[in-house]
Length: 255
Image 1 (cartoon, one colour):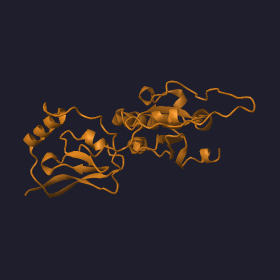
Image 2 (tube, rainbow, N blue to C red; image 1 turned 90 degrees about the vertical axis):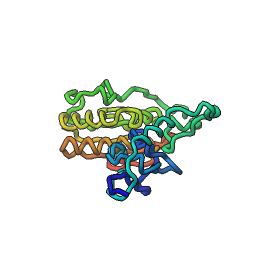
Image 3 (cartoon, one colour; image 1 turned 30 degrees about the vertical axis):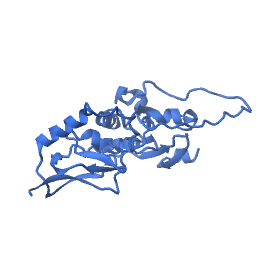
Image 4 (tube, rainbow, N blue to C red; image 1 turned 180 degrees about the vertical axis):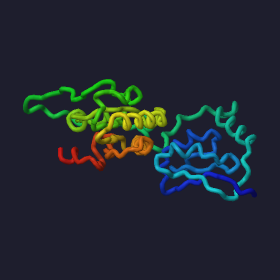
């Protein structure tokens, strides 16, 4: 058996988000019992295309004895994954992804009844600029210069009931989806903003589901690529609208 490069999975660090499944063009990986698994050594080319998208760093490439990479077997496997057999029974509804993303795991929430106002109520927006989508923001935008940037995962805006009162005041905003968007493009755009706008700080706001942590990874990687030091905080939001965790955001703790 030859010694060659082959993928290695750290089960302790793997959160089962499934990003590596999307990144592996050979179909060598599957999610089994909530963890990424190598289906077979012959399907893995050892090039490591699945590494960069892993938000927890659970994937590495090691050199060890392994079956030879078999391109013909890969093609056969991919064909089998494309379409079910003509004799197969109709496919059942697909189960939610292991990561439990709100877009794939249907959950019914029970909204709290709004409290009756006891005094003057202001519903004014505290948003200070537009556009707000990360892909549309230019590094030279004046509202980004020396700003405290709030990097919001899209779903957080709908889940956090007091977003405008608690998080937005005085912040520049960049929004996107770490699961469905091109995360590499977001990292490059964010790195350009960090380098060109001389940001004071970045705070990532993301959902409790593991795949959403990709925005924290994106911010960390963008800071590295920019080659500058920027304070980085994070806020984790629950699907019910509660703030589950916060780190490096003294302005919120004092609020």
